Length: 222
Figure 1 (cartoon, rainbow, N blue to C red):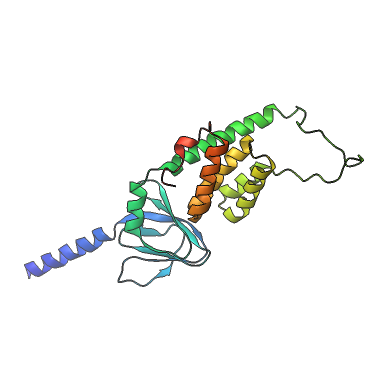
Figure 2 (cartoon, rainbow, N blue to C red; figure 1 turned 60 degrees about the horizontal axis):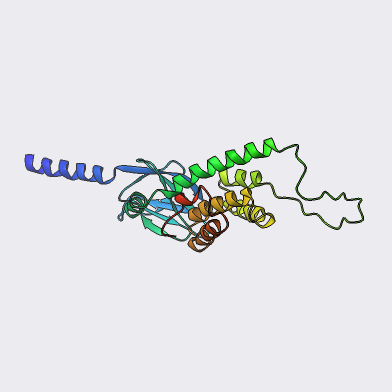
């Protein structure tokens, strides 16, 4: 009898340890499901849901989920994926934490841009101003403010932020706002799992801004 109790206790402890929480769900977009282990059915996930090392995450079309790890850092699962939590945690632990470094650099650049904008508020524009009543006036496209795109990024409205960052780049490809936009787009495409577009902006950032302070924080394997 004592031996049976001991075996049951060991099994219970093993199950408990195997189900130890390693993180929680920080952000959900669309349909995301989670199961605690291979023997459990999938159930719809919710914000703040604790996840275990033996668990699995599954995303639907146009969906994604971001996991906050207990030991620090985050991982994102893009659309139409099924992945084990253990594998996701191993990848997060093994890869260089370039994303946190880039986010810090982006924060510094954003602050510098804000200071520069306030210090030059009264200075005449570089371009000649043409009034709408002038015979020279045909059409002046409204300039896209990067602050609007950043606000969308910070609320994780990535699909809305992308075209605004692209517009900032197109209207002045070699200005500081373009440098910052490339960096934000790299972070966005990493979160969306779009490696092709991520690589594109890494290349453009290196090419157009060879002295950028963000270069030592870019993903080395992209």
